[in-house]
Amino acid sequence: MKRVSLAYRDLSEIPRDFCDNHGADVEELDLSYNRISDLRPLSALTRLNTLVLDKNDLTAHVLLPSMPALHTLWVNHNQIENLSLFVETIAANCPNLRFLSMMNNAAAPSYFNKGSVQDYNDYRFYVISRLPDLEVLDDVIISADERDEAKRIYGKRRVASRAGPGELNARR
Image (cartoon, rainbow, N blue to C red; front, side, top):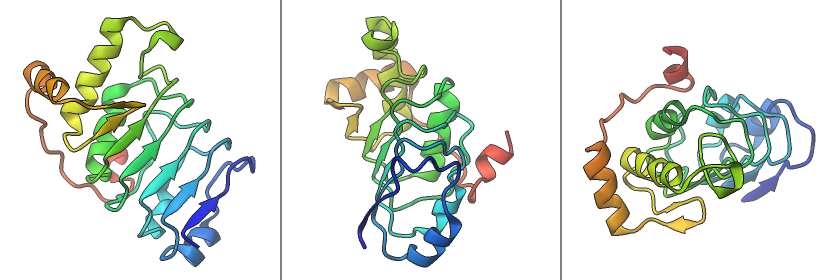
């Protein structure tokens, strides 16, 4: 059981029995089109490398466990409004993230949600500066020029302390 879809189930929370019973087996999980806001039960999925959470109830205050194996995260069409809070939470809990998609969130301005080109570019530079190992943001590969500009504007990423599951948000 490497790939699992629990999409379109009208779930308000992640089933703990599922996580406890399949924690060592699941590598890719799709939880799209639910009503999930608390991701802490995912701490049991130790091999999880791909997580799709499109169209849920996620905000910048998401309760996120440490997920060192996670390299792909999609959170499109959620209610994420505070970019810095969300990205710092991701940076602290998903240190190996390579692919992130945040399209259609207020924190990810684009032409489609009335963001200007400057807003979009600043969003990209900020995320790139805080997630230096990221390779793709939304649907665009990160270029060397973008990395240089992100460093110039935002400087080097400050290393956040490694908080335990849910601890980062509990301190805020």
